[in-house]
Image (cartoon, helix red, strand yellow):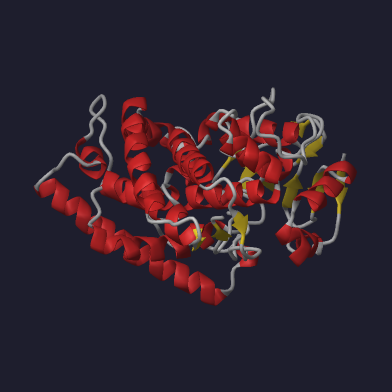
Length: 398
């Protein structure tokens, strides 16, 4: 079923109540109008099967220039995987797969465990701590910076640039001209920083990932400098921003459900199952978009050619036609269907295995070390729409 509605759908989806808890709003739309046509060349897609079909379709694009009504012009920036269609996407993904081989991810698991253990050893049983600032940010940021051999003195800059660039993936209607200017400045400074690093590694390669990307050649194919810059920036930003939200959202959900916190603390729940349920329950990436290159027939209706479809991953993960008791958090339930928190299809998150590992270690160790922790205050949300996370998360450890 397709339904045309006024543009004030944006107000409903971004209201303070929907920001705090988007899932009841999603459920109402998913029931009444699962394919929601704003009449502006923009559609919202709420159901799991519709979302999955769009993510897997070869007749969609991640390049909004294919839209009948294009969005605001974007700055001239180096190409990244998330903005490329095949065959360019496939070529770059093949060349960057070296970053996330099972052997490399296993090595990073050991480093994550070291960082988490060192951090938790500094906490006392009577402390009140901000888990976002003390653990959720430092651990994945340290790992991705070490992977790319970013000097510790430069990591605060990387975090600042990443924070601004995380705002760039929000739909243009949610960004002011002033915010766009600040994002462009961060993109320019970040790109210059990475270009300098690439040049140094060309002169003297090391054993870090950026050196490996600079020197990698497959079947005579190598990455251009612009491609190297785009990939390095993407790895640095995506390599920690979404994991921060995974840890923060996951811990918040557990603290709001004491029985689930106790299940994790007791050690009976496999960490892998816990993380997948937390990813499904409150996904760190709430939406993505596709442009229809042809009319796309979905289970709920047809989206015409040239339309921008907002694929609501968070809504799909709460679809009762796919998930039993979708609005309940149950870390002991092995769900039959896979969630869409990491997307699907050719753009499935390249760093999913690393993000899972970091989340498992951080949350598993924290909860087992401090099983009686409680929320000290309701945490404020970050001012983003695509990425869902908390600015801070203060807890009392006993």
